[in-house]
Amino acid sequence: MSVAEENFYPKEKKQKIAVVLHQASSTTGRIGQILQRNGFELSIYRPVLGDCLPATLEDYAGAIIFGGPMSANDNEPFINREMDWISVALKENKPFLGICLGAQLLARNLGGVVKPRSDGEVEIGWYPIEATGRGKSVMDWPKMVYHFHSEGIYDLPQSAELLAKGNTYPTQAFRYGENAWGLQFHSELTRAMMQRWVVHGAERLELKGAQCAKSQLEGRFVYDPALRRWIEQALVKIFGKPEKTIQS
Image (tube, one colour):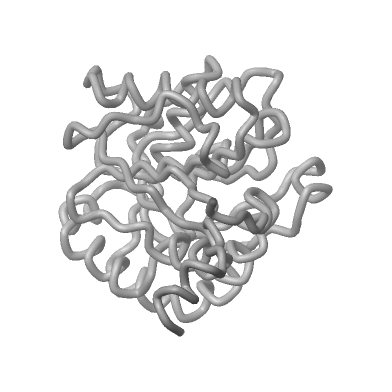
């Protein structure tokens, strides 16, 4: 096709999703791959490195805040900015997904509490979750999910719906309104990402309740296929499929 012909035929403009990551080396993993395969474009922001977040999500199909090694309770400017920024998605009723740290920031934005267990037990590895009655009515859920956290969500406001619960930390998934979702667990990890996490976070595997690296990697073969199928369906539930728009 010639340049003239390319200019004659309008190009489709992809809908964007605003994505917040927390390290220079962080990636969107499998979730990013699925969203891009579904036709979305990802706009990456790293407030921890000084990136400014968009003042409005008017030009976005939704937003995601991923996890990170920091605490949702850290009194860091970027943590406070991210937590306040969630109000933009809520006010504009845009689809929002918080994963681990992102879910904890959503809970805090709504008035919930994020804290460690009094006995210091963590969730690092594969652990079972159980869907609530409300959760079952929303979608099917995986039985086993992957965790890498030492704090959990407590005291969800009554306006938020608990969708899945766990034995160690009570809040595993919740929804606020129709469009804001929080997941305490990780479904985005590729095998390479999991290997990096267990290597770089080796000291955390000594914490109470954490599973050894061998168990985590072996568990992936058993539990990850169902988790992968679930997140593919869940992303469509949360963000839908992008509408085709034409560039002018």
